[in-house]
Image 1 (tube, helix red, strand yellow):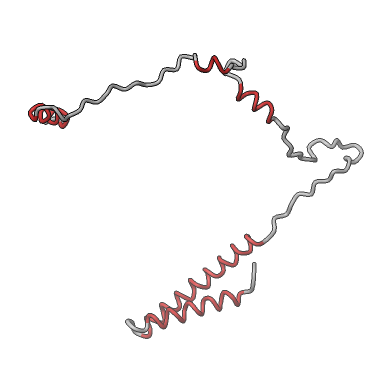
Image 2: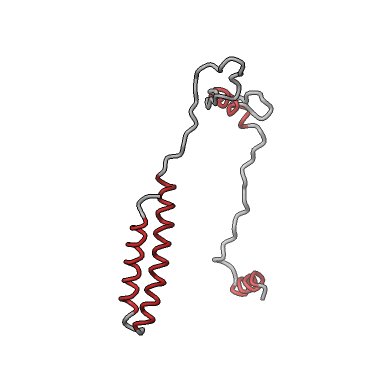
Length: 145
């Protein structure tokens, strides 16, 4: 752990003293001392946990040494090294993006005649020249009333 138990004691004493000072206003001295003791214990344990977590965070993790030398006699070198290199497949990806799902390249002229039709929604009717009774009837129909 980082530091010694003195850090825990100092942190606990500071927390207990602050609790004693703030609780003296509305409590008796005995109750304030009891609460200060509880605060000391809580702050002491909190400092202990903080130091333990800090040690775990700051301790370097042991790394596994990888040797590039040949395996000793009688042992195969299989499973000793890890090579994290992937092959360059950018050209294959570009070819895949240029082709259709069947695998053949799609000419530019065929892209226009593949059956795509733009959506033509119906035109909305203007309400400027409608009778007020027809508009009220339409609103009642839409609101379910």
